[in-house]
Length: 127
Image 1 (cartoon, helix red, strand yellow):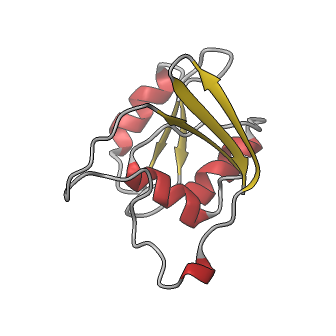
Image 2 (tube, rainbow, N blue to C red):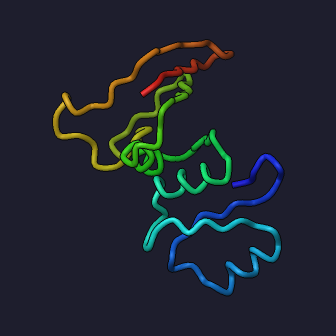
Image 3 (cartoon, rainbow, N blue to C red):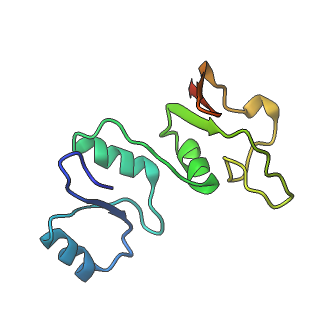
């Protein structure tokens, strides 16, 4: 991540090389240790918040998207839809993870707004 002031922020785990973290700190990077085995997104958001960062954009694949939703760190979604169909049994959806067991457990989207941008559609919604 790069802060507005241009400084780099690195989110890592307790397993990261202490020597490498010191090298990066000396070069001006801020290091946030956010978990033991993998980066805990809730801890990352709290750490960024403590640094004065209030808005975070996560642009990721299906698994990081699922992790962010499961961690409860998402309050707004911006979904771009292209006018194409890819399909396929192995095609990745926008949300990975374990999914839900019952439709009643699905996340409810609120304040839906659709905007055409060229040939694409931007769907904006709150959680």
